Image 1 (cartoon, one colour):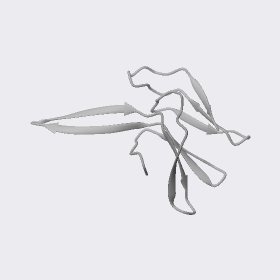
Image 2 (cartoon, rainbow, N blue to C red):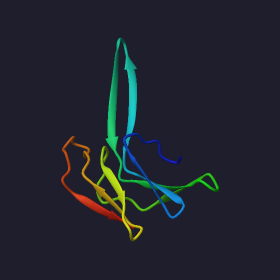
Image 3 (spheres, rainbow, N blue to C red):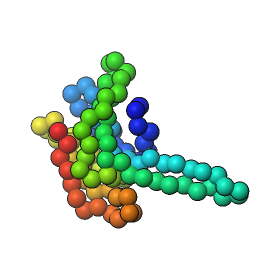
Length: 97
């Protein structure tokens, strides 16, 4: 996987899996405390299970994690809600083609 991510969605359609958004999680131990940063991502990748390869694809408009993604009948993916980089809960949606 080109980009490490957590809290993303994985939506299968037409033989490939769209991995969208999520967050890059980075932890740094200092003394007896672990500091963790969570940075939402706008990037997306396609995974081909036949060739076991990942391909970068177009970014979403908004970086988001903890969102939902639904495969629609026309093959597009509807991405809804989530959390942005400031921790705000999003009330927006995007149509991923």
